[in-house]
Length: 185
Image 1 (cartoon, rainbow, N blue to C red):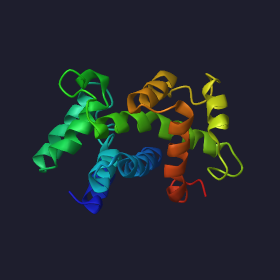
Image 2 (image 1 turned 45 degrees about the vertical axis):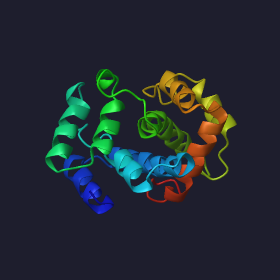
Image 3 (image 1 turned 90 degrees about the vertical axis):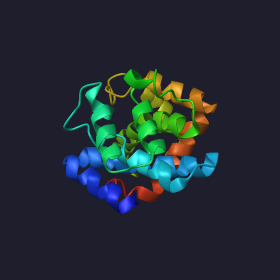
């Protein structure tokens, strides 16, 4: 599957602008981590772009991820991408453990990317000049972006074997090139 085909599929199943922007953010973070960890940038990017493409139609587990996996398999998408997408749902971990770099990275960047975008939206300069310290301060405020799992963010950094500050720094860096499409420029 090409990136253009993945974008078309995302747009076919995802109408909400915020979920499309989330997909773009996770795609950017996945491409960045592919470069850091020696993964295939195109494969990792598509996994990030499509990780929640089925969410609007099937928001409840286990249908979320499994319906998407079915659609992707019907279209002949690489099983590495399908497995990564399945692994980001805790309900699939018995069959799709986070035991590969692509799976670890997708879990690690999913919640954090969304949280960083939320932080940028309330800053006058968006992502520009953002530091891990300010993100960590917002993490301590339970009412801010309350739906974001702080535990998943911490667990993601640990899964990657990274210090939380470094993981946050890497994600900020990953999102800066797509600030425009994310509405953060």
